[in-house]
Image (cartoon, rainbow over all chains, first blue to last red; front, side):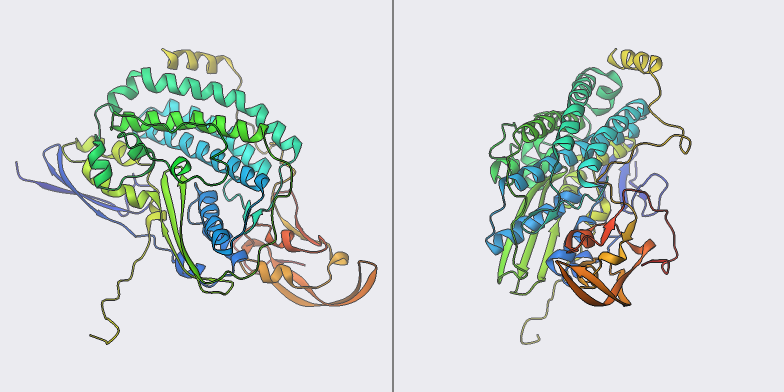
Length: 372
Length: 119
């Protein structure tokens, strides 16, 4: 049968964000995928070069609506390291609590979206209902449900009051019960098993070869998590486990995310119960010395990296953002080969893509210094 | 079977949605809502204007005498905020030395008119 090109997007009713897939199919089977990104380039990296360290954080939070705390934390962490600042333990714990709550809401959102794309809208409603409890906790602590604005260079902006800690701890048992039910459901519910098992398979070697990160890589047996392998914030002090799986398919990715949901509740519980007393920030200098740093962070979708270069002023000379979705796109092209066209939505959704975040621009200057 | 049990439990429980606007969810104390300015506390230092990431705070003429740390200061400027361009990050509140500019815990309506201001 001749190969057929099925073009999806950039503007398509099924897509939430603009992207262009050219699926080359032989009958119902996918032969290969051609991907066209960057329909939503916003110039955030260039805008970041114009703002000082106070004004740049709200901008970087807006790289992503789901992992807003991740971007602000990874940037603050990098600048603090260049400045040589030591952050108070209470601030580290508060940052960890917000980071793990963010992971919980991101994974619950993903579970709902994955259920939605396989037509299991009942689960979509349930997970999004439970996500409200996480969102409410974040709102009580930070004042907003999306852009928390907790970070500043040198610590955090807001302290947690005993009432906020108590309210968060009171919500946790309900969430833990719900997550236990999701673990059971993911492992036993036929609707999900039929659509997730052996779909979008990727071996450990392929995951390493194509640079997959986060739950996508861990579901293929890659035992790597920045929180454990390059500890930051309070992760070195908190007891928790890296969740891995060997299935390598969408089922494995679901198991990893649901497992991480449970681990996040335990990290949040530990941090809330053992919140150290003391200051929540130190005074940071207005300018950062000349330096370069690659700051890494385990965002809900995987490893997030900010390359930051400072030049002795109160602004960055360059910030280069590598989001986890950008690292995972190549693995999608691999996973889709020999799969059915009907499985495209669920395989794409399995990496939890955030398309606007991936819209980065790289300018390669091919003219060298002598102008050749 | 877990799904069927869950569906039955949900069928017998009350809905979690509310009848907005008749019913309203409680807004937390820390909620970052509409920006507000207490004019008699403002010393006109311009810090809010300098830290605003959306650049919606401009300093306009507002001469008056203000008490600050036991001294009487002759203020020249006061802030003016473009309400619908404010991103409610609360950096102004964080950096204000007197607590004159702050975010109320009440929702602000949304709008497209960038010239609506609060002083």
